[in-house]
Image 1: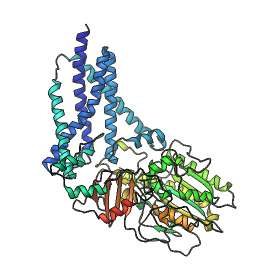
Image 2: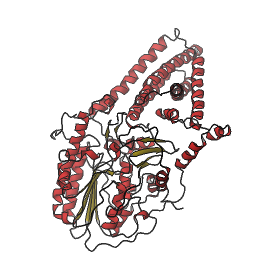
Image 3: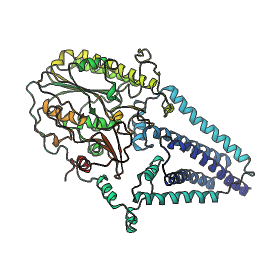
Image 4: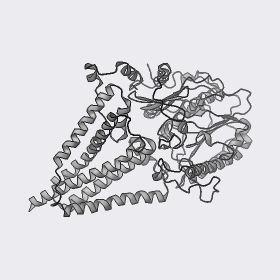
Length: 611
């Protein structure tokens, strides 16, 4: 009696897995949505074969699991239940990854899972309608899987698909596509090799050394790629390079840094942020200012360390606090830190604010706007209770714009506007205006919180440096490449942010050209804290009171960074592959790298390690 059940299970599972492989292929077509078809037959042949091979490989992992269960357990109800659960989860995760890829051009990775687990709803703020939609999609997968499972179980004698020919076809696609990639990689045919990155868990085969023996490798291109390739540095971090030499001022200034999460440069004006715009009339507005990256983790890192995001991991591993924050505490500044979202994910409590005792690392509230209100209230209470005889450093990070979060009773200054963002709807055909208006309404709400702060500190203004900026920008598909939000490219939409500095009682002129977050630390250390070290000891920027024109601007993080110069944006990965874009993030296929500037920028990635 066992043999018929075994055969039935085997036949059923084969048919069931093949049907789900087809489902996986159909879902994975979404990875191709943001990309145009190749211009040559070779590009498209590679894409089709690699697509079938890679999705088949992912499906094979599911197949091994289910077939193993069939060998160990001979109870159809248990076998089918396990297959349904894992198949549903596999397809749901695959679908979710397509949404991540379409908006950010990367796949689920350790950083995303870390933020999901560590930050939870404080990092990813979804409406209940969106959660309901996600739950409905997952439930639909389960219902469909149950239906398919039962249908195939009942008609298994009528359907007898020969699996071996299909397996051979899949294997040939896999073998051919990886072989094709070896050849294309050796000749630096980027239009072919870049297509492998469209799919998750993709590790295409390369063999430049082998190809070189046959004389196939483009030697000049290989030399350039070798120069651009990020090398793993095992040396010890040396930050700062020299001990700090600082002399506290006789009359120290207070410092307040106000940061808006996801604040793009063109969203600071009298309509969107009236309070900040009014302050800018009596302060300095920097019209061409850049974050050090396109995300909160590395944008904030560049603001407080004056270093590119490449150094984030060694700083975190060594739990090294910023020179700036160390010096504030050395000079007995009172410290007030008021983050709306959690300061534990990303790990700012172990990096930027590591040295601060009794750190306030979160705000109360289920929604970003509620946490913004709480952070503002706590700042005002702290400011009222401070020691007026001692200087203070205060920091506030507001989050409403990042989460498209506005109180229901807050007036809609910009219309038409959505009430909630639905991230599942975002694609090339989506009308961005109502979403962008929701974003602007959130910024207007955040500006109202800044108005409360400015009212509270009005008696301190003559002795307080106020810096207002964003950690990174936010894109609404302006490049028409399907990019939404941030953390997906280094265009101006995602990296250019406002900067307003109120600097009391000084006749010195602030620099009026292109600036970056890297310049903030040298400015504060030299002009507020009296440090005499050259800025190159602790940062890659310059003081805004003594700055020369940027030869280049370094953006990004370890493994994926960009070098901006002369109106061109050069994006590079850790393997040395690069793409060049204009200021509107449109491809410049014929542009060439300025290797002198690129290599100078790469030196900044090595400078703070012991040689």
